Length: 152
Image 1 (tube, rainbow, N blue to C red):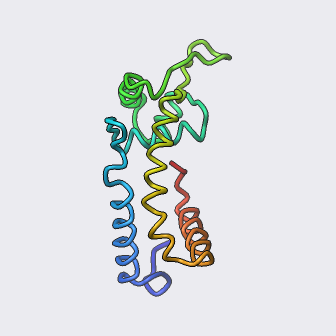
Image 2 (tube, rainbow, N blue to C red):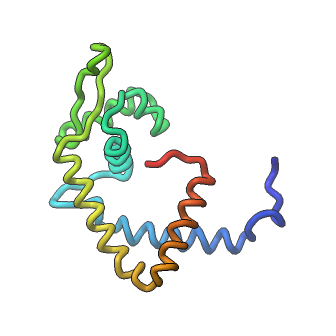
């Protein structure tokens, strides 16, 4: 199926959406990934958030989710483990499999970054009514669901 312009949003609407989305994204990210003298990359952040939602997973599963080779993921995890944000443990049902889990330090880092995001969004969101906030969240969720992309 090809995209027919008359069936979808105009290029102007798409451009305005992208511009607004990136402005909000920059506002959230600005310095937020630098907490308590720690600095993490966006990819490291995505890995930590995935692990928080999934409790633990094998390196291969994580590599597949992030669309990288297992060897590349292993190198990324080495850095996260060095910072004490994750730990590798043996799978209880298969001694050949190593599971990745968040440490307490990793959970604490996630909480501190999300607190910054909450603080940064509080004022802009307060310019909307409660109904507008609910509508905005519902519409963004609908758009995210339509992308069929997994949560990060």
